[in-house]
Image (tube, rainbow, N blue to C red; front, side, top):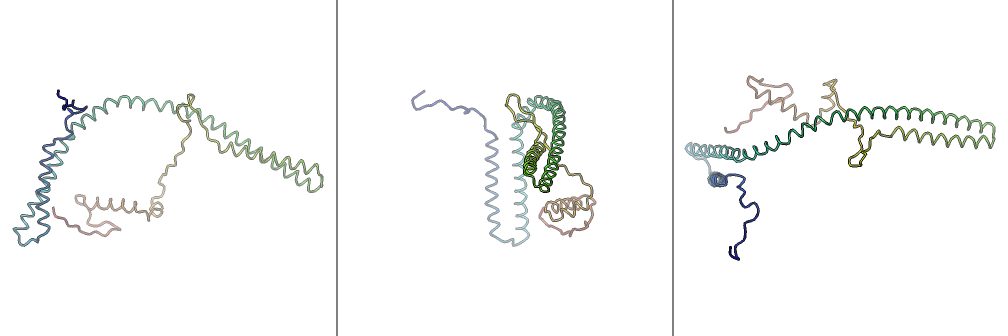
Length: 249
């Protein structure tokens, strides 16, 4: 090896991702068709022979599109097959892990249900205590106002402080979320995830509510077009104006 020569780099012997020769041929055909069609765009069809020639050009476009798609699928297949091999290799692990999660979650959910029940019971007791202390504070304030006693006023103020503290404790417990921390700290704490799920009860009210949403109009239009284009489909759909769209086939 001379001083000017260098060793080939890593990956120099990796085959190309696709058939470069076939790709170049298809690209050349596309360039040729582009030139021909751009020439046609600049001129008018003068007779039926011109129209027939242009029809052939359109046929070449369709054929080239078909050939390119066929070659693309052919070039992509080996990569898809290798991808399937990777998926198959990892599928067993994924399936096993999918089986492992549910029983662990059921165990944790059962324990969290107990914690949640305890939290609710504590919150209820603290709320009742806060309300009782508030009633006692109100009673003492009324008594102090009636008697004019300094000691009675001081007792009422002390009761009000206790009522306020009890109210804060109850509110704190009511807002607390049940969680199970990670023993190692290597993962986030587990908690209940509450998800709202809509269950359709009245389709007419639902339509009225969402009638101005563009997604609903798009979905209904899609249903109508599916019906109209189906074999032996209807000639009209209630609520829709049907128009004919023409395109060269």
